[in-house]
Amino acid sequence: MEIQKLLEMRKLIEEKISQLQRELEFYTTLLTLLDKSIGEKSFAPPPKPEAVEEVKGRSGEVYASVSTYSDYLYIKFKQPVKLDGLFKRFFLDKFLQKYREEDAREVRQGSIRQEEVLKYEIEESNGEAVGLRIYNYRTEERKREILRVLKWTLEKVYS
Image (cartoon, rainbow, N blue to C red; front, side):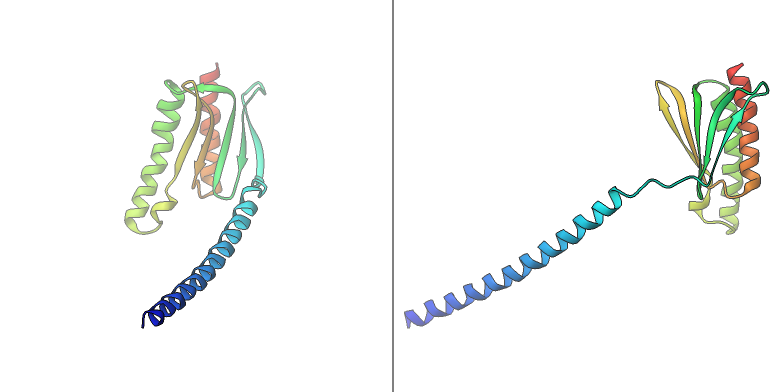
């Protein structure tokens, strides 16, 4: 009788080993697929802008370059812009905030979704803006107005 129990235990152990080997194959295959997917995404070329233009002052000096992508504008300043002056108080806190408030009203009315509200991210270094991304500008008219007011603001900041 004791030999019978030992044989049953042996059989259970063999079945468990077989099951674990199948699981190991499954997870190894899954890991390979994940690695392949990660590799493809990490080496994907960065998106190309749809358009690139310059923001120039009255005398022709270039203040910034603006790259237009499908869902955001990327503004790269030629010279860093202080974040404790006119640029922040007027352009960010007053002008862009006006669009954010309009968009929030449209969300409440149900005409746009929350993720479509204008937002921005500042690239900064040592308390100065070196770049700015403006997401969800949504219309060409808004884009033109943003760039017009940016030009005016930068003329005042750099003068």
